[in-house]
Length: 204
Image (tube, rainbow, N blue to C red):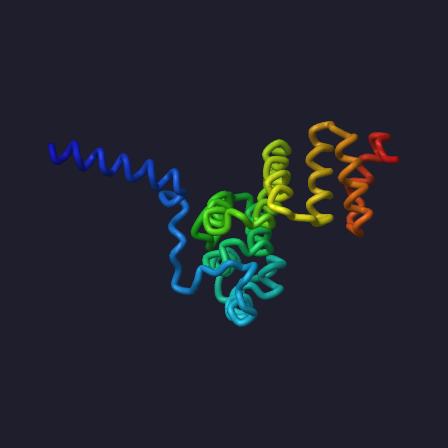
């Protein structure tokens, strides 16, 4: 009977933890923080970024206190919704061709899971998550994240540009052009989307 109860407890705990992202992606407790990057003080940001997320780490050139993945991991444990650090982890995963970059505690998906558990109302997390899906060639999943970012009030030419890229990949050139025009009207500098639409004869 005790063995059955123990088995039931472990099965229930595993299901609960998996549902909450705790089984594979860890809980959010940390020695320093975690802090919401949107409202963290400059001192809190400086303390972490100067030691673990300087320019050479963000550019994936070399680690500062150890491996690049470990430095970005530390940054994301202190600030789970740090958008530039999330994007850096995505790029590192692509560079190394592995879901869990060298030195990182978790997979890229886990870092997004942790960010959304910590700050579910942060539209910038949704934007970066959508970009991640775009880079994984999943335009529909990307659109869902971009819609969430929009619903949370994000107004950013980067969002429109990536909306346009997602619609382009799905063959909806009218919506792609609509978002592209909006992004460029707001001063977005990259010309790739316009060139894609021009190549299809869809740019006006």
